[in-house]
Structure formats: C-alpha cells, structure tokens
Amino acid sequence: MPESFAYKLKYNTSQKLLNGALSVVNFFTPSPKFTKKSKYVSKDFYEGTGELNVTPRDNAKWHLGFAVASLLTGNELDGNHFVGGEIRGGRKTATEIYDDMRVRAIAINDGVNGTVIFAALDLYGLANNEVRVIRSRLSEFAKENDIVSINLFTLHQHSVVDTLGMNGELKEAFLRNPRHNLLRKGGLKNGKNPDFMENLYNVTAETIKEAVRNLEPGRLVFGMVDASPYVKDQRPPYVNDTNLNRLRFIPDNPDSRSTWIVNWCTHCGGNGSSRREITSDYPYYMEKEILERANANFIMILGAIQSNAMNKNAELLKLPKEHTPIDIMKAYAHAFVDLLLSIPKEAETEVQPLLSIRHREIFLPLKNKVMILAFNVGLFQNAVVKKGTRLNLVSEIGMASFGENIKVALVPGELEPSLAYGGTVTAAESWSGRDWTMPSIQDMVGNDKKLLVFGLANDQVGYLVADTDFVPMLAPESVHVEIVSLSNKCASTLLTELQTLTK
Image 1 (tube, rainbow, N blue to C red):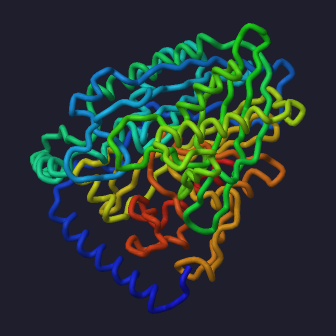
Image 2: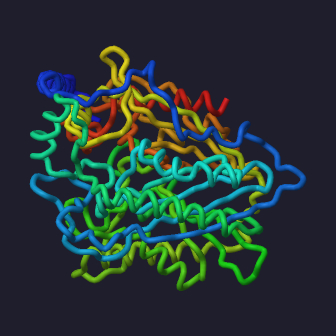
C-alpha cells in the first residue's frame, strides 16, 4: 500500500467529492418505502439446533440425503433473461447455453439434534428475503421433518441468469423505477425474471424435500489437499485457506453413492464476467467428472473468496496455446478432481456424529452512496430497514460444528479471508494507517479447530473488508471491492455479531 500522504489525500478527496455528488443524486432520487426498524417483523428465520454442543451423544449417528435438479426453464434465450456479473449498458441478455444451472442439496443430521439443510445453487447471488421465500414454502414440511436450519448458498458464477437484480436494463431502472417509488406503485423492475424466480423457488423447495426423503445412515470423514497454485489473490494481505476441503459421507449401504461436500476459495470466473453465455463454470464440470470417476454425489460451497480469482495459467492447466473459456473451465475442474482423488483414505479423519448450528439475525449498516443509489433505483431489492436517516440491510450469520474439531462460519457475502484466519494488514500497510484489533473467526473458535468458511450464505451482501483497510473506490488498490461493499463498518459489525454467537 503506498504510504505517500499526497497519494492518499488525492484519493480520499476524490471519495469525498464522489460521496457528495452521489448524496445529491440520492436526495433527488425517490427511494422505495423502507420499513422502519422498529416495525420490522422477522419471518422464516431459523435459530438452529440450540446450543453449540461440544461432544457427541451416545446414540448419535450420521444421516445424509442428497438431491440435485436443474434450475433452467427452457426460456432463457427469449431476450428477457439477463446474465449476472458485470454491469453493462443496454440489455445484457443470454445468447447461448453452454451447460446447466443446478441446485444441489443435502439434508444432514446426527440422529439427535434435528436435520440441517445445506443447498448450493448455481446463481450469481440470492438476497436474504428471497431465501426466506423458499423457506416459507417449506415451513410445514420443516415442522413435519424436524428441520431446524435451512441454508442456501450461491456459487456466484458471473455467467448465469441474474437472480440478484443488478444486471437489468439501466435505462429502465433509472427512469421508470424512481417514478414508481415516487407514486408508491411498487413493481420495481430489475434484472430478475419473475418466471425464472418462481421456478427457482419451487424447484429448490422440492429438491430440499427430496434430499430429506433420501436420508440414510453412514459415516462422515474429512480430508483436504493443497491447491494453492490454483488461486490468484488480487489484494493484500494474501491470506487464504488454499486447501480443497472435503467432507465425504460414506453410506452404510454399499449400493448407495457417497457424497462429497467440497469447500474452496475462488470465484467461478472461467467465462469472464462480461460475456452473455450461460454457464455454471468449473463446478458443473467437477460434478460431471466426480460422478464419472468416483461415482459420487457432489456439492460445492465457496469459502472466503473476496478478491480471489481462478488461476487460468495455460501451463498450469495443461492447455494448448489456443483455447476457449470452456477449455479453461474443464481443465480447472479436471485438475481439482485429480487433487481430490489423490487424498489418501488414511489421511482422512473420522468426524464424530455431532452436528450443531446456531444462527443470528443481523442488521448491517448501509452507507455506501453507490449502493444506496442501486437500492433506490431497484437494482438491488434485499430487505432494508430504516432508523431515522440510517439504513440497515437485514441479513443473518451462522456458526456450526461438525464433530468436535471442525467449525463452520456461515457468512452472508464475500469475506476477506484474513478476517477469518488472521493476518489482516498492519497499520503500516492499511489505508487508514490503523491496526485491525478485532479477533479473527479462527481466534473465536480456537486455534485447535479446523475452520471452514461457508460464504455467500443465505444472502449476498457484497464484499466484507476490514474497516481499517477500506480503500477509496477510485484508488487502484481497491480492485473494485469497495464499490460493492455496504459500508466501512460492515466487517466489524458482522464479526461482533459472530463473536456474540460463538460465546
């Protein structure tokens, strides 16, 4: 980080000028009618299993069920389905379908503490209020089947149908939606296709039900393998869990397939973020190979991915000089399957049948003037509450235990990995010139535990960066992080809530 006072003054000043200009624009842009925080009513929020248990019960036994389904409707090329990723002028609608968009779901319990759902979707993002729509459609089923936690994760592909809203037609968002806000007519339009969303809700709910119906007893083991060459971290402090982490469920029934739960730390960017073809990127090709080579089910959940990109180096991926984006995605997936298959069984550790999970509803400060404008014009439609002039995004966090030694933090966005694992930039390195003094998530759970981060969990709130290293948007060091961060107090708010939850 440059230490020149003049250099920082230049970009700090540019940020103040930008904030001033955007404040004027926001003042004259009618906003949606945000609910008063005092009148907010929480619905379809799950608290979890209760206390975070630390030892297995005598009668505990792992049970897991898996299900997978396509999210495509067949209408994606009708000119009314936008592609998520990079905001562009005009209509960034889908032109071709390379492969499938899927929802993969597991239901898992230890036979004692109730069933927990983890579902990963091939989506750019899904807001917490959309997650709650899906939960609402499962409410009766959840009661009947002792489901205590329903968690939806997105794999944040920048090349799938937009389900967050930011990739709609900008002219419509800036001209039509403010008028509707002014007249309180509602019905704001953005990049989400209503028919696609309705299908997504139904298919996801039914897939979760199928996973529950498929529950069967077995064992759970954990293994990991170093995959550090395959991540390209684009912003200091270059801290990451660079292991491919895998929880592997081995059914008691020898005729049943095992299920691999894989956790990894890079964006799915094999097709880039500006193209218009629909592809679920390397996770799709991983699933295909794992089924063919290991006869196993596959679900992937991203970790702390803030500025982590795929390393697309052709030599590393063993690609010829001339290659296509599909070649990159397939080669990246193939390399990962090779790595996962290389984990020796004797290197895997048995995970005791102990599953506990706790959730906490949180309110994240929304101060970023760019993001406020995006909410005002309807590009984002996450639940926002208002207290006086202050805006807060309604979200949630979670903490889970798998066995006695694996802790999982459920984080609703793209977390800077050093906030999880330690090693945040020092005062000398940070933009603010101040040290980050909060404990890491690893500190919270204990250094004797294996910490996994399940990112983009039950929400997409953008980047989560240390308050002390919140860089002006126009500075090169930002790497486009701050422009889609809620505020410079978001990380400390979230970690404070996580600390409360772990205590």
